[in-house]
Image 1 (tube, helix red, strand yellow):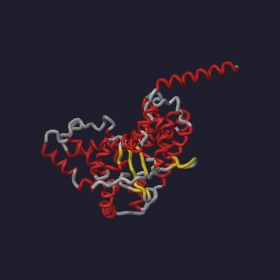
Image 2 (spheres, rainbow, N blue to C red):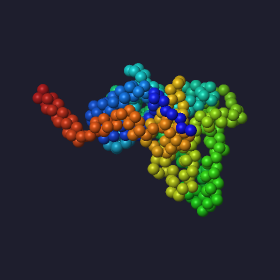
Image 3 (spheres, one colour):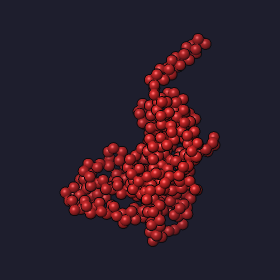
Image 4 (tube, rainbow, N blue to C red):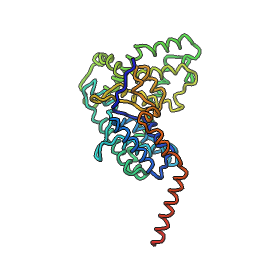
Length: 356
């Protein structure tokens, strides 16, 4: 049964939403970027919508700020960082941020406040606050150590996923080669799909996630929990995080498809997509959380759980706000605006030369 989305709610957006929002807008002249931000904020305020920052989206944008300044990803993410922070800014002193899935699970299931994870989120927020004030290479250089650490964390996590998946495939299929699981055994492919689509798969996945979170926070002082106690948490976790688990099922189904190479096409991003989906179906106080994402598989996973109204596409969300056409108008005539900016700079230069 599909749940109906309320008229007012909390919205959280993935990195690609912010990148698309400012695509084609010049980095050299941020006036249009700010116009788009204001359009978005005004439309949401009129409908009682508040935006909250997801740390995974923030980390993805930050990780590209150590790329070459000439690269498309660098320019897009630098502009998007300005939008993300202002979208989630509460006032001049604070911003609205969702707890990371790890932080939420720590508190919800183990009653433990993961202060280290919270402090990491605060640090990310500070960097974005500075980038919103001065969207430039100068700010990036100021926080280059923290941004590089974010890039390394993302890289290491994705490579660990690739390594673990490949090892598992080799264990369950002696003939496994080159991302081709049970290539010559239709019966085993069918058994694999049946397992991945089963309740047992979801239960095992939930237990593994809960155990992984517990192992991290145990080192930080969390009280002792037995494996039996963790197993008793599984049914609630499965019910609560069904959209994320649905995406995980889809992900593991793909390994019996020829050519599904986890090292290509940013497929290891699944790791983050699953965690972003953990917000879908949840509330902050009495307000529902709605995710805006351009990723079709993430929205499909929510739909399979009756939560399709809580995972909107970029186009759906802007249409709902009634600002899609206005944003497209702002994006037009970018060549004209570029030359207008050049002329402005030249005039400014001449004035300086005359004053010498």
